[in-house]
Each structure stands twice: as structure tokens, then as C-alpha cells.
Length: 196
Image 1 (cartoon, helix red, strand yellow):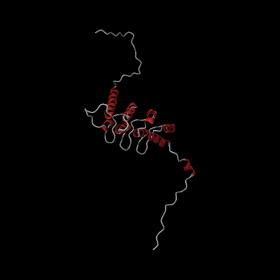
Image 2: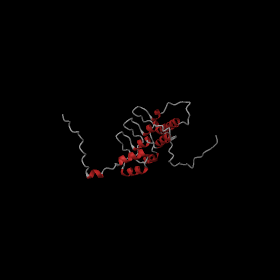
Image 3: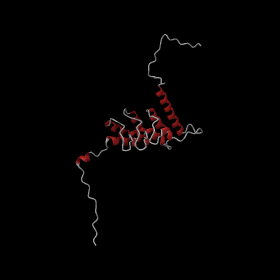
Image 4: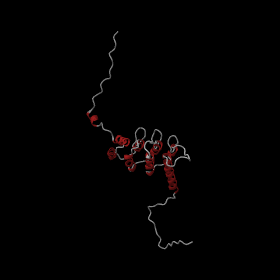
């Protein structure tokens, strides 16, 4: 009885000349790679070719999501300061915003990193009330509040920053905010008195 000859896969077809020239990464791929690797030069090059920084990958993550996931502090400001940056986009996997990710990741080996990332997002206007797919706000991802906890601990500092942002948002929503940019109008006929 004779055996059949081994089967081999046919060789791949030769590449077309056009395909060889177009093998580089797209601007979107370079943007996301730059956010993951904290590469300032690459992110600037990618942004020169893109109008919207909020492009997503298959998981719904933006460059900002990846900058937070990988703690890419060098590119973070570039991303947050881009005119099209939306700090509150939710990814597809867990419905997390970058703020959810920053709060969840502890970065215990890098003291103060989580607080820096959370505060950067809050300063950029991140919404503390957005819930992920598990109905959790960013503050819900912290361990339960403990009155005996050290107020200087990372968890408590992050909790304090989130509560401060929530309070500021509530005051702003109620309209009780003084606009510091308005010029003070002084009435020359108004007389102030220190007497009772």
C-alpha cells in the first residue's frame, strides 16, 4: 500500500507593487501606537494627518483611553489639549471612560501617578457621573470609604478629587457660579460703610 504524498500549502502569491508601497501604518494606527508607547514625536506626526483625535479601534478605545491605560504622561497633555478631544467617550468593552480606567488602575509601584492622571482628566472636564456597563461611576470603583482610612492615601486623595469635581459640577449646574471673567462694574455713587 502506497502512502499519499504530504500536502503542502501553496506558496503565497507575489505582492503587487502597489501593496509594497502602502505597507506603512495609517495615521490612526500611529496615533493609537503613540498613545500606548508615550511617543510625543509620533503623536504629533499622526495628528498632523488627522482632524479628529477621537478615532477608535475595534474595542472603542481612543488615544486618550490608551494614554491612561499605559500611563503615557508625556503625550497626555497633547491629547487633552487637542481641540477635538472628548474626555468622556465610553469604550465598547466595559463602557469605561478614561476616568473609569484611571480610577480603577492603581499603579501602586508609581506613587501619585493615579492621582495625577485622575486630576488631569478632571481638569480637562471629565464627567464624574457617567456610568459604565456595570452601572458604576468612577468613584464607585474605589474601595468603600472608611472613616479610619489615612486621608493621605492614594484611594482617599482620588476620592477627594472626584468629590470635589462632583461638587463643582453641581454648583455649576445650579447656576450659582460667579463669572470671574466679567469686568467688575463699580458704581461711583455707591458708598460702602463699615458702621452698623
